[in-house]
Image (cartoon, rainbow, N blue to C red; front, side):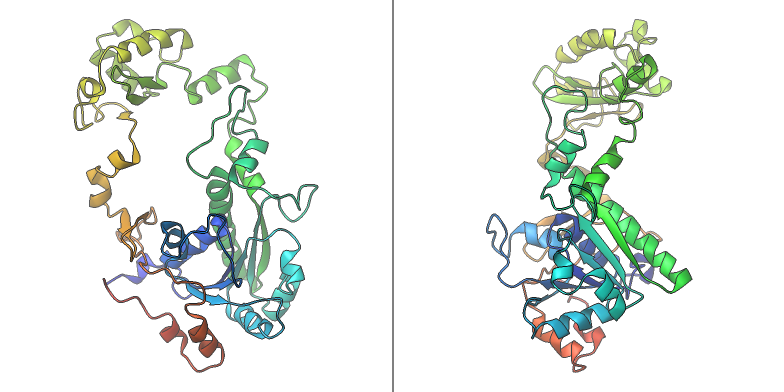
Length: 384
């Protein structure tokens, strides 16, 4: 039995018109927090990789939602769409600027139908500006924001979507919740404009104010760019890697004592000493430094900030995620991360079922016609 505290957004009504990762993940998170989410989908929409409906991609983004397919270009489908707008507390859309207006559900129209509506617009470059109509995806935004090669050299493409999730999903969620809290005070909804490009810029919180690189700036940036002995990735004799993050003096002192190098104690942030530390780590294999289970060899993760660089498969062997119930399986057995938070000791539940497009279309239409109760439409999934 899930406590109501674990679903603090229980009863929040969300109309999901977000077709890409930033908005679709945001609304999936809302379902886990208890919101009732109806995904309004386009007819015959296909993923660019033509993935089958049971693919993990869809389950990562669709679990817990209800799906209805409506053609907003068809006058016969527009009354249902407008009824869903009147029902919703929140509308999330992810089209380029102007598309929702052309479909007849722009913010002015939607908020005239429902003045309390929080209308969240997620787009690449925002609703205004010279780039507003420009297409893009995650690494085009991070490339343009200077994140892939901030000081020149060969760019590095991260394995995760920084602009999509860190610059879209997360700021969008914060903005949405802020607008809902404002609505509690004013009784009025809001139109919220979140741009992924701006979200990518938000990740320059240290880089931007120090980009001119005075001597003091360089010393600071050397640390967080991994150019100093105390904060760096080191290769071991067997081709594995160790992450050392001994920023605090007591951690660096513990490291120097463990490797019997007291002469290094005053050089934690001196790049000139990096080659010596690199040579030391390359002299022994990973298990010498951290043990065969990663819990400690010469270096102890309990006494200093140090860790092996894992593959994802290795990370799945960590007992921490099982103890904390961090992951959950969907109906097809795929693992997904659960929300990284607990409320009064309980983690929000994770839905298992991801609907196929229009799987709930008949039920949603019956609900809009008054022939099906809302609680019945959003009845909890049966236990596995």
